[in-house]
Image (cartoon, rainbow, N blue to C red; front, side):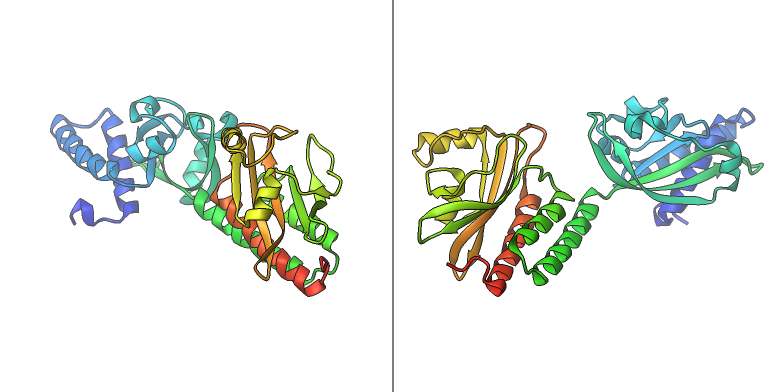
Length: 318
């Protein structure tokens, strides 16, 4: 069978066996040459895989790592060889297999958290197999890793959307509903500073039926001014803002200055019958908290569901 026709598991096990064989002292010179050539061919195949592959001895020292594994963790391959696999573990917390455990292990698949060179973490699906010598003793562990952050994030967003749909369908009290939405949204995105604004077209005022913020108190109901909230209410469009974009908006005369500084701000409109009747917003005060499409998508879905609940309960009827 050609090496390229073998399954991934077959290739990886053979690669591990070849590595181990070369390390054994009783390999004859001719056999050594053939084994080395075979190993180079196998490594070329494994090096081209998109899944991460690491071979370590039973003590946890990395013997081989393919480019996909190194790139996934922010390293060059040469930086990993000879290091302990604990380099992939957050805070270096790693529990190596004992030889007795390795003897009993056939295959171990689990989800985990790995850490990159820059300290950031990501979710992975790990599968480990034990490599044995001719006597059947465990001599190495070969592990594949696949990043699943995007998949897990999508699953969490879908679960949150389902919960939001449940809460809005059963809603009877608007304030309780906003508390529930805040809790659900905060379960998967940064929502420590979360607010819901309501627009009253009769008095041309804005009020905040739900407002949680680390550094400011809930504003009193007031006439519309020229702020970010008012811009969303007037335009009916989602608005991302940072300090940089805020400065441009102020310079262009779009809004007035903000009393409470922030780093990132996101507001999405709540609409009913084509009219913007309010908004849901979040903001952060630190550079390490960024808002993107996931937060936007989740808040827009929440706003749509809230609009339906308000229509059904007539809670915001003018």
